[in-house]
Image 1 (cartoon, helix red, strand yellow):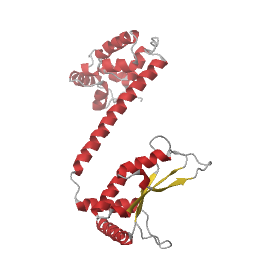
Image 2: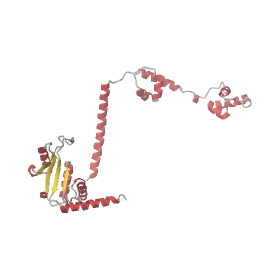
Image 3: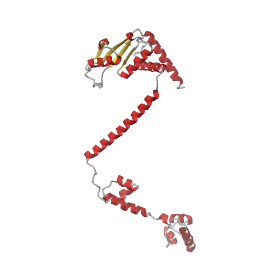
Image 4: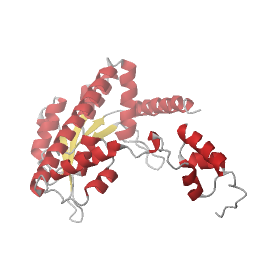
Length: 286
């Protein structure tokens, strides 16, 4: 910006004001704004001989940090390690030490993989403990199951997994199929609550033909407290060579089919119970 002689004619007065402001601790920019000085050369002449306030000086601590950062880099530390040690930014560290040789890796690739694997194992173990604690807390929160709660649980189980009558295929008969032994036992406890006679309950295994059928039959018979010979004839699923089965291994035991004889009336009640549950649940959405 070009200055005019008239504007800065009283240089001595301006210098006196500028020195006073400088001694108050103002920076050059603050003095420039306060006195409306648009020429940096004149501004520097106005405060010539007056030392800048301490707060405008470059901190000496940075010099000490730079020296220490270079020492640590020379010792083989990474940027991350230096940052933790000194508490400064990695961008500053990079500027200070970029001319120094990069340290040799502390670990080989195999050692790094081993460390990562060990760290992941520890993380998963901690997560497993958290899940275990959450499950245990939820288990304890259930407390004692009342007859009404078991009734509602059984109705919901049946409506999710049991055979249901359709307008195009009327099947008012209680037939329940599941592969989870805990679900099977819960359903049987529900039938007992409803005083369904044991002789009306029939069991049949449904399993893939390539599985260990004999072992599975004995497993389910033992679970429900039957002699193996009391099971109805097993239904074998034919193998389709175009599909890849995932239900393989020692834990695969097929599904147990529970068929309740003379259960048309019970099925109608199940439909009624379920419609009552749906109606009550719907009131909570209004």
